[in-house]
Image (cartoon, rainbow, N blue to C red; front, side):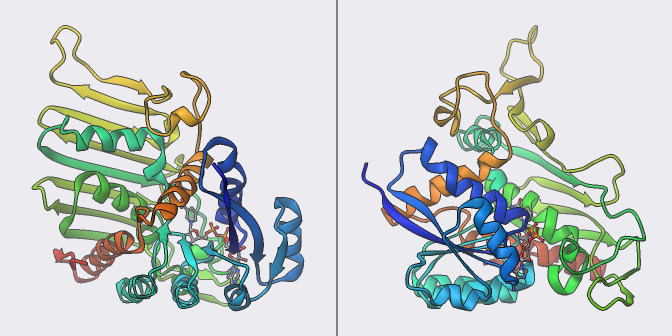
Length: 381
Ligand SMILES: NC(=O)c1ccc[n+]([C@@H]2O[C@H](COP(=O)([O-])OP(=O)(O)OC[C@H]3O[C@@H](n4cnc5c(N)ncnc54)[C@H](O)[C@@H]3O)[C@@H](O)[C@H]2O)c1
């Protein structure tokens, strides 16, 4: 297949800038695609940093102002890998300039911003996607296939956790490079937008809309030194959040996230219990899907651990041979592959900005519920 170049302009070259750059570089080696991504330009706030990143990863040029990057005629797609408080401004400007947009999660700081972003991409008619990458772990995609095929039957329960332990020390500052997640002005919220947003995106995809939520949050360390001002300032993010919810399909949901679960680094787990079968997944063992099928003969009935590596399983025919697993970075490769394939056909790539708005609506309802100590309805989007 002849490949059309697709020039990428990357904004922000931290953690996600690296995972996305890796994906653009690898995707054409493993997937036969209509487009070939070209690492055209990387944008960072300092020329030295951007130059070093460009040299390391093979970007052709640099910018130090994302507005200049968006103005460039030789850029087709803007990839937003910056802190949450910058997503809306960059995405709305990129849409107005007619660029395709790949935006990191959460979509926005809040629902109001999110609506403006959705309006901008839909009015401009530009291809868009949000990097809720866990959808594209092959075992998670397999869970989607099994649920969509009706194998679980009626779903009764959905539960998810995302546990970390990296902010327990009260000496950790807030704000600035590396620690913007602790600063509400940059992050919007704490674990709700950072971690639960992933759990919510997966849940909406697997189990449908959430109608109502009842949440509690806690900020265990009330004040931290701010890296940018040097002053001790109140901490306004949620350090931990737990919520109950009701799904539109009648099932009950239970979600928990914290950065204070000593011993856990990135323990994202979910479990779905249906009338006929149950399944569960664990990011620390991401190539396995646990599955219990009540239709099995009672003598051998039990939880089975499916090693999601066979060629007929989602995405796996593009990789090695059965039995050999892939990992975290491949989820981003899969999203680029899907984005390029769909965009060439004029089809959307989920989660689109509009799909991610639904996650934003749940996050906002969760935070409102925790503030008001009462059940909140999720605003339909
Ligand atoms: N999909 C996922 O699993 C996942 C994982 C981590 C982070 N994220 C999201 O990705 C985004 C970035 O997170 P990260 O972990 O890569 O953060 P990071 O701190 O590692 O990197 C952020 C980068 O943005 C740069 N930056 C900040 N303001 C800028 C500006 N105005 N112009 C240009 N560059 C600017 C910083 O210098 C840094 O290079 C966040 O929205 C975060 O929620 C998603």
